[in-house]
Amino acid sequence: MSLDERKYSLKEKHEALKHEIEDEEKRPHPDDIHLHDLKKMKLNIKDELADM
Image (cartoon, rainbow, N blue to C red; front, side, top):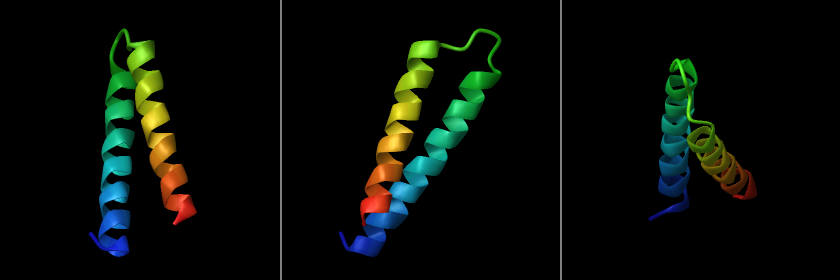
């Protein structure tokens, strides 16, 4: 996988996590643990992109 392909893949995952977080936050009783895990994954992807 080339660097550009890796960046594209990470950006897609980041966007998908963003939508999943938004959906979870809209639920009447959001799962705080799940939200925390999603946000942590999103941040890890952001950090990896920044390091490229």
